[in-house]
Image 1 (cartoon, rainbow, N blue to C red):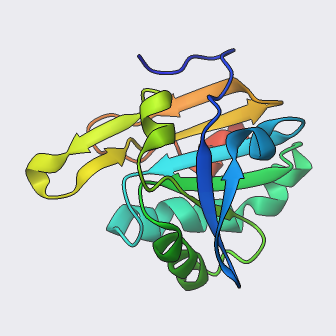
Image 2 (cartoon, rainbow, N blue to C red):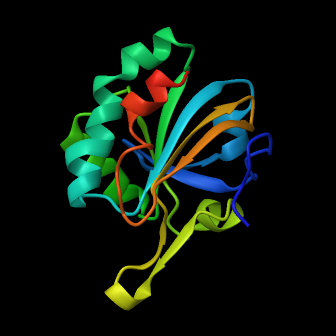
Image 3 (cartoon, rainbow, N blue to C red):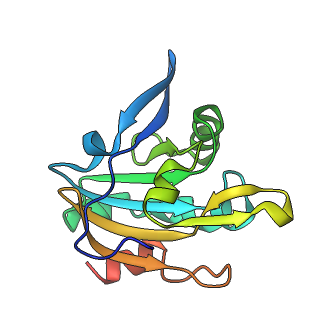
Length: 160
């Protein structure tokens, strides 16, 4: 069952790439006490994700901050090495935390998993965006049929 507005983000461990290697960070550490823009996507270095989704949040980081967003987090079912390399490729700097959900723990716990096994991709994450305020989902946007509209940074900004 998909997570709903008002529900708490489940407590799971994600990984971010640091100079010393992958570092564990819990969802509690990321979301509790902060207003966070979280977006998830099917995979690093994929066409829509690289051409639109991540660049949109990077370009709109300041505008989101002006609306009260304290942190932007991108999550995908990839390992921390891939997410770190993708973040460098996308020039996210400190604007977007690139969080690896390598075992799809967050995707499954929130009901946002996407089974692309028949296409050779295995278990992935649906394309989504949400605002999480002090650990609770404040807004949730899900794309349908592989589209890209309601999960953009621009859509989030217009609805904050």
